[in-house]
Length: 79
Image (cartoon, rainbow, N blue to C red):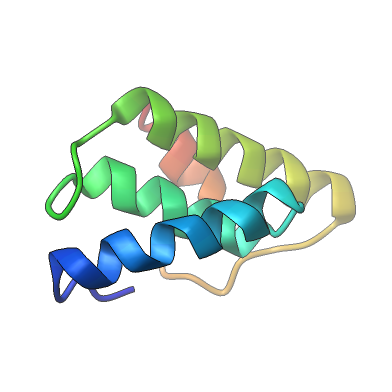
């Protein structure tokens, strides 16, 4: 995910939030990254950790996995 502009990030947050609320683990990971990064939005470690943990829970309960460089589990454990 590339954080090119503040406007872009602020525009995608509602879409990622709707998808994450609907159970999409990848959207959860993206939201977590946005809030953990804090470069284009106010940094919120608690919210980031919450989304990482939800993504991990979703992934492990469904037998899924992530094709990211770093797993959601490792990201969640940072917090």
